[in-house]
Length: 378
Image (cartoon, rainbow, N blue to C red; front, side, top):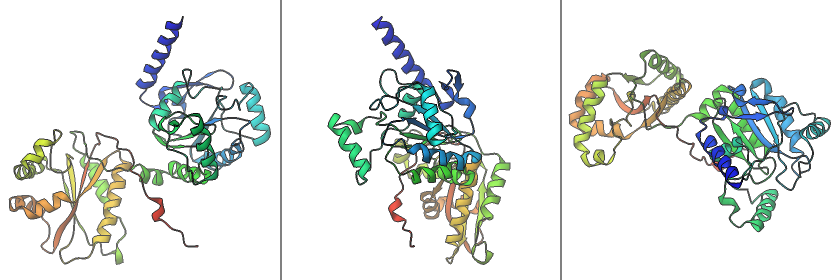
């Protein structure tokens, strides 16, 4: 019997690891019916493990307020009661649901009670924890310091594990099923709302999803898409509508290959060390060259144009990377003159930067941003 249990646990682990997205999982609702999370495709999800007798239980009110505010925009809150933390979620799911509707008038769906840690953890939570591990409590916050002290007394290395630490841990999932963030119960609900607002808004979510891509599929971007992206670029704002930019979209694969040969000759050792090297433009199949007046000026406007281009590409399922190194090489190596000549840049303009563009062959994680650099003057 023990061996059979171990085999079943191992099988569950394999199934969880083999799941490619959140939509591969099924859960039980509050009347013991199977629900496929694929039913929530296209929705922004906030997944929460909850309890009815916890110090954080009043967060139910904040969650319901959040749900009412953003439900019409595509937010769904999925509530999974869990009795693993201080046995603070006693009773049946029906009793829990009655308590929550009576005290907090919740409208978002509640699912059957589950384990989120340990050998009986629901596969959904095993997957969620693998996507976003524990990021730590803010010990400058009184509640965060309290939780850190309590858990560290039980396990000095608790913070090195990805398991769920307490009730009301939250996972934010994008419309395409990617886990965007994990919030601990002590995290500010205002921060959660700000992230939800960005996730449900198509423009804001597109901004937050953009990453610099350095690996691309061997698939040129269709001309029609490049036309749309270029049009989005030149619709960027510019001072006095001067539009002080010149844009060249390179679709000629041979031209990219020929100038890459010059680069390889000049950087032989570097190219040898890069087993994935395809071309000098981060291996992208296409590039967009942005030029500004040779005498100076126009750099700010050209930067706005480039951001429009990259966000438009992101919205169309393409990846981009803004490049400066190849520009310096092209300008400094006389053997690259054929490439510059082919761009047909006016004499009073110069190449400023290049945007690599193509179908991404990687999904880089977001790099941290320093929010302390922003101050609000009230």
